[in-house]
Length: 128
Image (tube, rainbow, N blue to C red; front, top):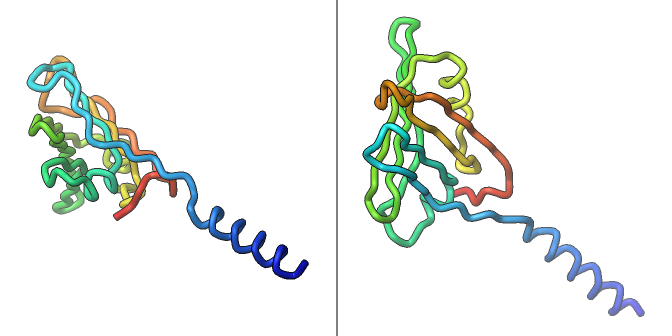
């Protein structure tokens, strides 16, 4: 009886440690067009076997002024990037962690500018 209980506890703890994991490689839609957008999990890109894909945002602050550039490259070497000075978008980008999923798209009329930056952070996105 004690062995059965111990075996059940070990099985439950092993499954509890596994947790949900979503692998979301970098995806770029409509590269080289004003409709371009990119998304993917930072951890999945970092852990990918292809050594090509990445996604993330760089924030620069100078004298109280902040800018952010988000960029991504997928496994086929498609590349997209956007730039923003929007405080809400920069706040979203500043919350990126290795357990984050990032989405950004370009402004149609100004395809170097970010239209939207979304960050989802959860333990289900595989970290580094």
